Image (cartoon, rainbow, N blue to C red):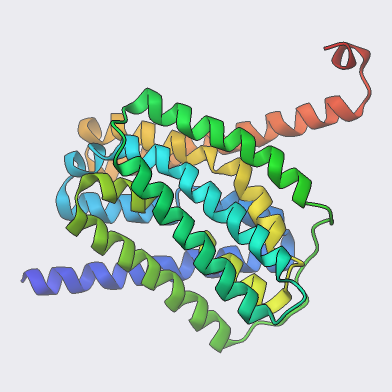
Length: 283
């Protein structure tokens, strides 16, 4: 019976991961790459990791690791920045080689930062402070690297490409949730913060289109990753009260509202600054 349930969980993880990554890839390639990055900031891969770990080990197990999960979003941010930096430096060479080097460098940095955070006595406030500092610094740095406007992908899709995306994303989700259950609540929180849906997305776009599209995805994610802090905090409050399923759904709804409000506010500020309003310039 347990083997049957475990098999079903694996199938669910794979199916949901497939749908999420394929949808994000298409939005990034054909609609707007920055939009793909923004949507990647929704608790998609992170949400799947949190849900399945909570389902298998209980919400109390996952919630006890949430301070490290929030702090480790900084490791996720650093992963993306390192990936972008390495990819740009190696842009003259083969795309596959650049992708492999950037992936390796980003993954090593994520584990290194995660291990450092694992050994820190974190609580919610200190975890949020760690995230905010890295979040603000990263936005400043990313802006210096974004020297070209976002473009749509010109490559065509095929069934083989879709299957590669699906398998890649599913394998990452399975690995993260499997290791999280084995290594304990702290590492469960840390690993749940890995950009499990964003990573295969930028790898696919990198290999197919070089440096044309994926930097804008990372740029969008550098803002929307703040949604994941909201996700962890709301889930921590609601899950023990409403239960895993209802708490998870309400948390998702709150994150969606936050993301809309956040980017509407960001757009308003950008328009206000560009308007040359004297009141802004005097500040």
